Length: 300
Image 1 (spheres, rainbow, N blue to C red):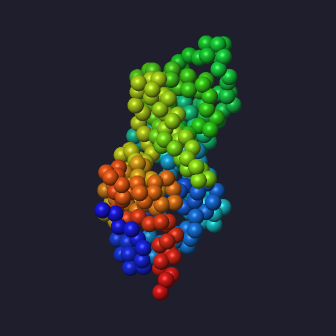
Image 2 (image 1 turned 90 degrees about the vertical axis):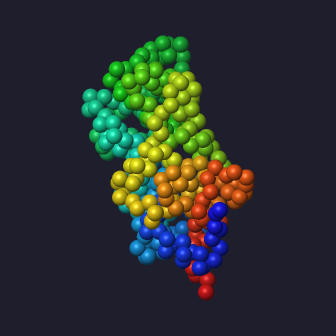
Image 3 (image 1 turned 90 degrees about the horizontal axis):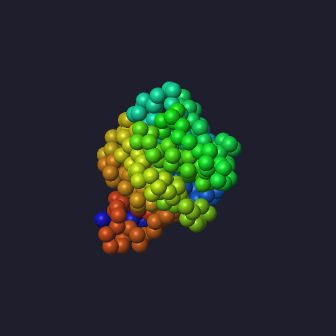
């Protein structure tokens, strides 16, 4: 059963329970370009109490470096090593787990964030934001497509410039069982300005349907991402809490990893989802918004 945090005593008990907090970003800290109330103060409160903060996002369109800039625009100072995104998780998986060969390339279906993180670990890639892949699908252009033996993996994330040519090229590659099929994340939607828009999972799903293959997913709630996070930060799961806004990614990620879970109602899922019949995951704690932790502690 979930505990709704509504008073100062509950906040104190909650904060005392954990040393490390993993935060989702969009829907928790901000909504699109809008910073949510008292987020800065809450982060400062946690830092003042010696808590370790790690920001874990499924958004692969930005690298860790780019994310530090976004945080700065909101008046929040973070370092690159406090950010663990699905693009970086994918790069770590390729380099550390697969020991991806130096003579092979990754075909990217996605944005600059993926490219920058692959560059950071020395992995060669093609596709992505290269204008040469913004090709109109004609009889001639599709006839020119051929499998490239130098491509050892297809990595698919959210691609804001998706076209039929890109999908067709990726499909040709993953029809080879020796070509790795990876997804930064499989979110069906993502929140934007109070709306839900198609997520990376809708693009990945096209390749799943057409190829019959299932990719290794490297964002929340995958075990692969959790293992990477645990290894990178040497987490004690019993003293770590996942903070997020959706059950099927954030809360499931935390629960599967043996972490505490705290859901806020400023993003995708709402209170009726938690309290309904047979919820997908039951967070240990929840509150109307993250900033409420700070607000309640100000009340005498």
